[in-house]
Length: 412
Image 1: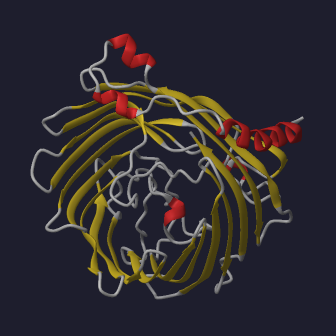
Image 2: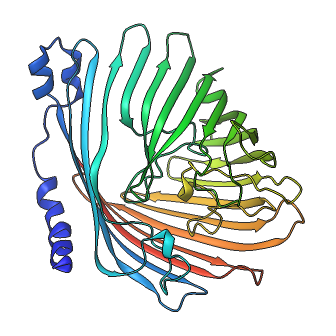
């Protein structure tokens, strides 16, 4: 039955994609009555099946099987600057030969694939956008701070991470944006909703086009937040600054992208005093309209081998390799050096990353990883993506890992 359902989901994508589009957000610019605004919005629909294969040293079996997510909702048009969004989600699996329960990560013969079955509300919020530059969003929502290094929805997982609270932006100052948020609950990528107290602050300034300077703060009060440190209280704060942009050379048809970031993480709201680590990232490269090549280094520091910098709310697949070998940084910290290459040819995009890992404390060799992907834009907002990641350990305490994914995605 599960296999037949998966076949139906995949086969239905082209037919659903051919549906005519509903009225878009442009209607929100008109003066509408309350009922008109509610009915003149647009649907939110996503169909995303994925095939997974994971081989991990230390497990007798190979994880294989399909997972999927279905999102369905409605976003109203604007009524005096206000909108509402209500969105449901259902995730599941077919041909299941894997463990999706982190509680069985030791006892199961299968490597973990943390995409469990779930049905519930994905987003439910109201938002306001005024002429003065003020924007507000209240309710269950996706939160992405900066490049998602510290706060993200971790959208690669079938169940995205969402937060409940208030998020505000102010764009009323020239070339400046102010941002603040406070959230009291989080639904994790495992489908579990937990209490927390999360505050975020950010100020960004554009000194010139294509360049941004920003400062931010993350205040995460949650004793057990998913970081495996052995501490009774893992609450932390991060304060940092970031510069990012591209120097354009039109005569060459090239740009020089760059990024520089520095931050410090320490204990907050009763967190363990051993939480004390530095963070930095530096990167630069060359880019054209069709290709990019760049080199980056990132340090997730260590407090003398007692604690390695953790980022439990991050986009795990956006950093330190797709195999997630370092989703939880060892207490010796992590120094990641990597090369990135991207090539786009019409509807096809090729992408690759090559990582070399060492510890911050002790400079131990922690292995290498190669990530390769190809994305094809099909039709009517349907994309297909094939990814392969391979981690090779250099220490007996770590194990080799191979992961392959094939994802079809259609978003309406």
